Image (tube, rainbow, N blue to C red; front, side, top):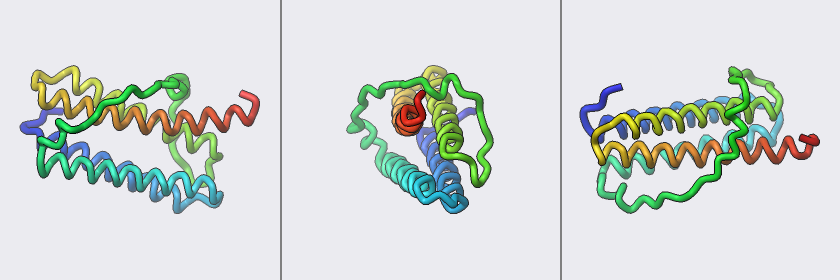
Length: 153
């Protein structure tokens, strides 16, 4: 991927957040188990918050300077799971696996993009995006880990 401006990167990231929100929204509407549907709906809303954050960055790229990085623990659960394709009616554990892998892929993509650019401004934006995806990955890995602990794992 080649970007011509910071706005191009932000537009790419906004589109990714919209696609993620749409995925979680559609998945929530296809779920018959209320708890799974609720978690997916909440995550669609979370993705929409990230979309808005990116739109704010686009309106004023100086807002990126105010972004606070934090240490996100990587449980690495998804690193050892095979990828699954989402299907309505999947078990809770498999829905979490799909979500973890989606967030892991986005995290890795932005991390690689940060390393590949020569622009300090682009690198910072990619690092912000990677950080946000790491938060998403951690959220789903924690849900998965908590669930698996109840199952004796």
